[in-house]
Image 1 (spheres, rainbow, N blue to C red):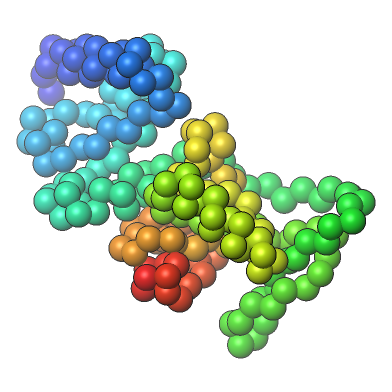
Image 2: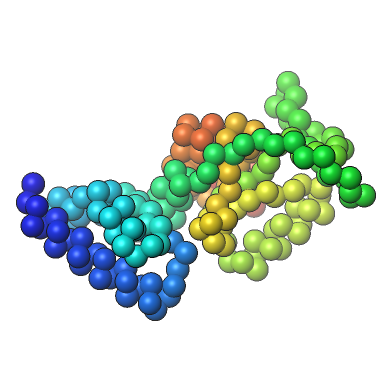
Length: 204
């Protein structure tokens, strides 16, 4: 490939990211690669780690080739890319003596979920989908009233607060048309997907 072109791309992207850092001070920057970057042979995945090291801000690269992904499925594309940056969930047993009892989800043979009182939460629930902070807080409170504890959100308020994902983590979508994110969560992170009814989930 053209090495000089690659260096120019890196410098231009670094300049833009530094401007964003100065104006917005974000916890993460997302690069969305469209068909244009493919045509000009721009190696976003190769440039991102170098720029990330220079500006000291995490950079997530999301591939959105084609009009469908770029304009109508942008949220799904970005969230699917962000899944790979989530830490691996490690189950840890913590003995806590609290008056408030929590609930744990136990799978049964008929694929329904029952809630059993326990001092420990065996399974974590992560909700994925972009919502305003006020709406997410209301949803957290509503689920808490129903004895459902939300352990994390994707995306989170801050990049450093991305939820841990793994075998014992249940995930549920809050927006429709997040099939790529759901597939990535199940295949890459081995999470358990909850098919939720209206108004939560892909059928919402």
